[in-house]
Amino acid sequence: MPGQPFSMMDVAPTVSAILRLPAPAQAQARGAPIQEIVRDFPERRKVTVLAPDAFGDFAWRLWQREMPFLRSLHAERSVTLRSVMPSVTPVNFAAMVSGTDLDGHGVRTFNHSFTCETLFDVVRKAGGKSAGIGLNGYTGQMLLARCADIPGDAGKGTDDDVAAKVSEIAEGHAPDFLIAQLGRVDDVFHLHGPSSPLVVPMLRETDARLERLVCRLKPLGYAVIILADHGQHDVPNPGPNGKRGSHGTDADEDCLVPCTWT
Image (cartoon, rainbow, N blue to C red; front, side, top):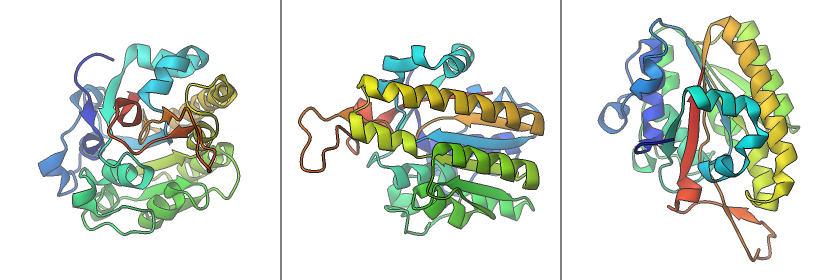
């Protein structure tokens, strides 16, 4: 993925440009549309953002051969994004939908409320609807679903439950904008560390899951953007919590994430 990375703050204006809507107010000063993505969707259409949590560029470079579907997409269309600081989940999902960083959106944890305009507001003002989806107790459900018009609580199960909820809402409600967090990716990286071979079965399942979702969403008229909120780095000597993967720093392992679209 050559070239300078784009910013997580560029996601919101990119989605707005595809939808032919104004960007959220703060995004007009901070983020900018990623033209490589926008130009592939010359006609107005609906947009889905699918985010495997913590699937950063570090893990992608290690394991992309285990993910043939994503590899095929990145071979055609690929950019790199840099997370805003701190490189944690609520802060960066909030950046995705607002186009600004923590100082601008005010969301430090998933219990906080936005202090700025978001994509949910922009779509609502235009007479459309949005959806936010995630597992119960995760940012997708606690923040995104709470702020969207159509809340998607996928329960306490697996990312398969998230995928099922995405399909259910897309087919039953056809929101203009849909964003979903695949949270179990982050869980497995925390448990084993992103460079451990023990993460490979989960990544293969994630790849197949994304392929199934794209096959469902494209016929419904969705542009699909696949990216992560942040990455992870290995923890050589785990502390009392036993976690072998972590994030939150400004290191490339934590901040650089791959992005593709179709």
